[in-house]
Image (tube, rainbow, N blue to C red; front, side):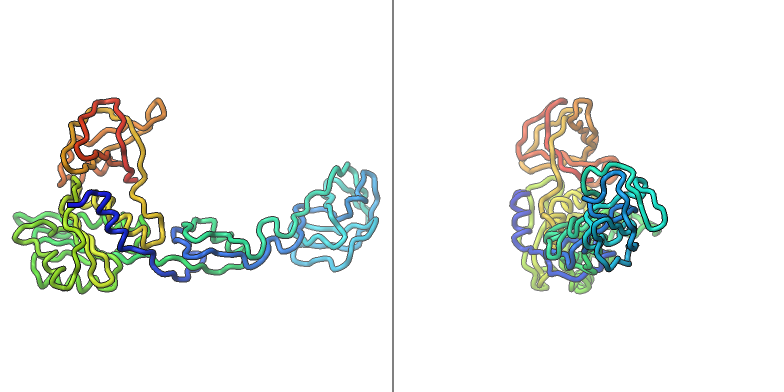
Length: 397
């Protein structure tokens, strides 16, 4: 039986970022750059005025100077001549600063009479000219490979005349539930049946980690039916059967997986909740079998499915973000499996987070997750601890 660390390592040893695909700028946020993205032009491509006013030679712009206006340069319509001594060009914000000029006298600091202007304020240094390339130069790397695109990147790349970018493909994740006792929400329940709920959390979590999840439905406890579900999952990068991971008489998922030529890498993990979690390969797909109990499914997905999805998506494949927090109540000693307790962390008065575990940690309970925003990690054979002690937490959200 592997430790949590060993299980994650075994999963990531069999995962490399997926190949790239070209994505339009409007769809980039949240995707991961598969290669460096370089500017295709210099920005701005010319010296541009930052203000409305008059383009002049700075040496001519002393207070009281009278200059002749020889033309104008609105944005998009450059003045084609050269600004000589004693001359000025009427210019507007974004206009090309004409040859010969190196300073803008803003319009509030000049008076105009016909074709003549008078500089009415001291000009202490050349100003209000945006040099060509002050933002970036052609060939500059604007986005490095591995960067997660955010909302501003689209505008940045558009300004660089880039219309699309190569990103890592989102891993396709096919999930299906297993169990004769499961029915979908809204159905009438017969004796012994329960509502199938895990896949709502798992698909949402998978999408948040950078995956493209698809829920295939619920397979009954029947070998042929399970074979059909594995067939339907073909083409997925990751297959996630939920349930049927234990060793009961009706747990057929792993036997069907083996019969289809699947390779089991590990079958159990020394973790609570989620000991029956297993991992293997079926063709090109990685297969993570999760326990059916809600807490077990959600915790093990966060621990083992998350790094796999992230690695394939080109993201850093570390587990959940972690940190220390101060317990508000005591905890008993831990046993021989690494344990993860559902808990809620809040900022404390002294600046450190304070964390309170849920009253019940039964693996069948979903309600503790409604308030929980983290898990308290308890190492193997960790001793009892009291209120006020520091513990490690890993964030759920």
